[in-house]
Image (cartoon, rainbow, N blue to C red; front, side, top):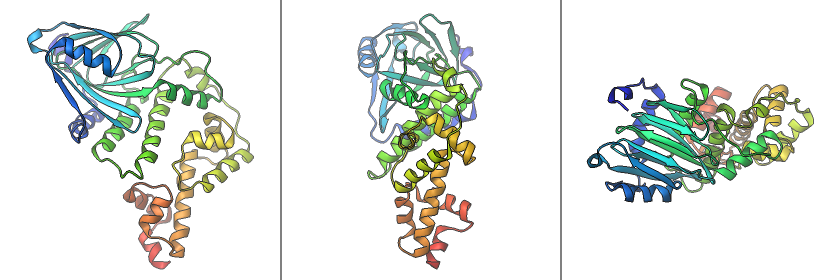
Length: 343
């Protein structure tokens, strides 16, 4: 790869990722620096999957830097080599790996498919069942998000409302400038924000579960895969009875960390059918309706003077007080503190 080839245009979202990267990787996340290719290869095999690492550039320039951490069940890492290398990776089998190119260039060739390449902003998706060969320029750095295969496959089955009959495989690269690429940048920014500013222990599981669902939902609904056509097929609108059942479940569990999967299971329908029903009968998404129900409950408590603003936010499932106040102001035209003073 020529140095000039790495001067690709950088999206604004990518600049935000670069700004967050040093902050996210700072607070206690382990970082490994290795100048020996064999040691580096062994470390990568432990972290990801078996592979063959071939050094293309000068051996004296090689220095692998791997920084790892977690946001809930999602493993996040950054990786660079400081020299041009080629990685022939065996299928991971147990996880999907989504890699965002932060700098430099990458080439990727999945088994039986054409070679894709790109500079900063390239998003690669390694399927759990497919071998892949990648080549990285000396100035290449990537940000990885690892999603467990069982969780993604189960979530896809919930979206479809039926079991998967064949492996879930993704296209190796997200199209440049696509909605999938842009929305994946948003997901990664959220993950890095939470890595920079860890949540209180009582709130972390709830928020991390929602972040995991957002990552899977973005990957499954925006990026092409072996079940995309079935997910895109029209579904019959949900009967009002089932919409009401979902809303009753939301009200009964207003303070819990509900996900789309939870609500769909309570309504005994697939996530896709649930979303179609709410759009048809409520003109909104299930999660937006849940947010409005939570705001209504908080207002009722504040009007009665039973709780503080902070307690109302927490009891209604809002982990961020500032975001709660902004949403409350938008819906009711006044800050929650003003409602509380009248209570």
